[in-house]
Image (cartoon, rainbow, N blue to C red; front, side, top):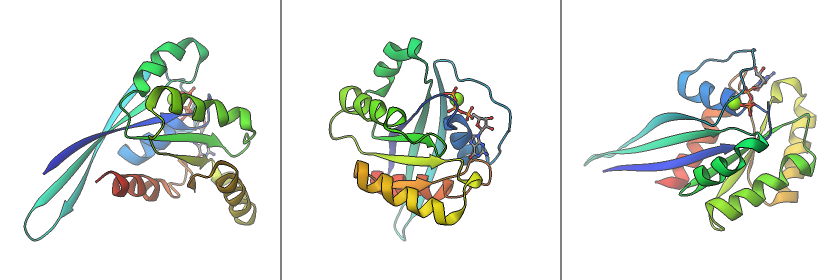
Length: 168
Ligand SMILES: Nc1nc2c(ncn2[C@@H]2O[C@H](COP(=O)(O)OP(=O)(O)OP(=O)(O)O)[C@@H](O)[C@H]2O)c(=O)[nH]1
Ligand SMILES: [Mg+2]
């Protein structure tokens, strides 16, 4: 069996959307910042083998630009998503950096489309603070939160694996 699913990455400028998906699909990280214009596409295949068969889950990952000027384009790209990741920079966790994206998911992807928060750049935070912030966000938005670092790779594979498990 082969199935194909679509995941979108949303979030404010410079939070690390591209870095997260590049870390996952290519295993690399760059300190330099290159703004995403429009959308970038990535693909990854998850394989699950049983005695009888080999199953493949092909995920298309859409890395959506954050700028206001791409709003119309972004809203169209969000449709038919099976899962959305909102990437948040741990330095900027006020509702302004989260709520509008949840609104966009509900409006353009669909009201039942699942999403989670990647609390990124966690390499710059100590672990005590990390678990406190994760708990606060989880209870405030009633959503699963992964503390990630595209730089060190922390929780990147775990997060995509969690999503894949929910999509099979
Ligand atoms: N320390 C640290 N820096 C990160 C991490 N993720 C991304 N960065 C840095 O943050 C900057 C922005 O990263 P991008 O991945 O380009 O951000 P983006 O969300 O794709 O930005 P836009 O395309 O403009 O929306 C770059 O300089 C990255 O190197 C991380 O986990 N830790
Ligand atoms: Mg980008």
